[in-house]
Image 1 (spheres, each protein chain N blue to C red):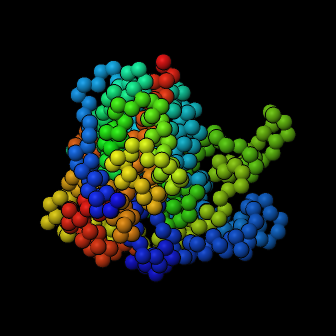
Image 2: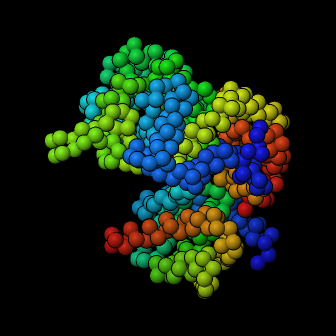
Image 3: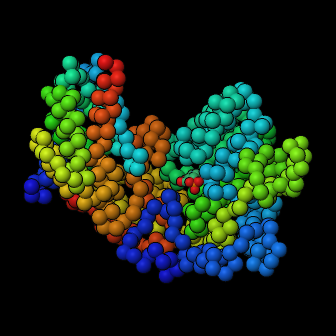
Length: 143
Length: 397
Ligand SMILES: Cc1ncc(COP(=O)(O)O)c(C=O)c1O
């Protein structure tokens, strides 16, 4: 993908983040995700019904990359089963680490395919994924 | 000033994060190298020339440090840094004299190292940690200290200058007020000692903590100053070689006098020698000149930035080299990433989110912290890069 287009997608998701509102999150699993080395700090809210992620919302303050990554991730995750999500995350992380990966429905998330070149920004991209993994674990532990 | 003294400045880099740590002049690096290459031996235990030379250098460093803050050499304990010093003060001294219900006063803009040791004492002993209210500029006023103290207050522990917005506290007045009320005063000098003259006798503080690396010295070494009679009663938190006189059995352990008693084990000898060289270097330039230089640069920045409407400095009135600002519509971390593309090092942070948010409605800021080697042309470059908001947004990712 052309780097100008990537920039546009990231900025668009930063300016108009998807599901950045927590008006109605009763019964959702809430997890916090923050970055030790910087000031990104978001709360994620997940609704999981019968192992299907039916809704994800978020709130908090984070840099453009983290916010865009969260927005894009949420668009991609809603409707997927937990198994699909875990596979998605595995492939996505492989991409960030410059390993072999399979594009499992990445859609806009492909904009991060060269983030490995900027080591310090990888943690911005992975911020929401850390939270999602925590939430899924919490869901599975309580099942 | 003196840019040629700093090997780090040979790189194409604009370093504006001196609140975090500072660059070292060559004379400091050389002093430490000399120790490692010419008289590398242990202290306080040698029967041969090079070890004696270490003893002399180490104890001269103590005298030099004492003179720097107008203390007595016996009142200077070398530690691993301000954090270590503050922990020793809390756990070695106050833990033994405070009781449940006693109160320690701090503020919401203290560094974690002046908060968490007190929280621990609170859990261990049942003391209370309360906060002196800050005014609308986040400053500590003597009136607010008066309002906060009460018969249970035993300690006031404050940064001389904060790392949050760089406000200077009226430590001398606070000490006078505190001592009239039998309250101890601990000063966290991590951000003040490197930038402004500190005279512990004049201030009359009971304890002072600071780190070498924030004043052009090496990492891993710092200072604990305490009034002699108080240091005498500190129970060593750490025991071992060098600090004992003799031990024959469990009941017969004799410890050395202060300050050696508080320096168990082989110390950071190279670090202490480096700290002493840094003090010499600072003295040659003069702390007054350092202070004037930083404040002049800050004013210069303020003057240049005032026409740039999307940049908001939140601590204009603070007389120190710390500038905290926000940029409309850009998250501070993104400002830092953007500036980094031009090799400008600044810090994005919530330094102390709670207060910044409550007091002025700003949660995170970009922090520029200046030191002697920063220049007007560096400020010019910074302002130039901040002047176009669309450019920041375009280039921040
Ligand atoms: C006000 C203040 N106190 C204490 C410290 C801790 O210093 P060190 O990490 O060197 O122990 C810092 C360091 O940032 C500081 O800014």
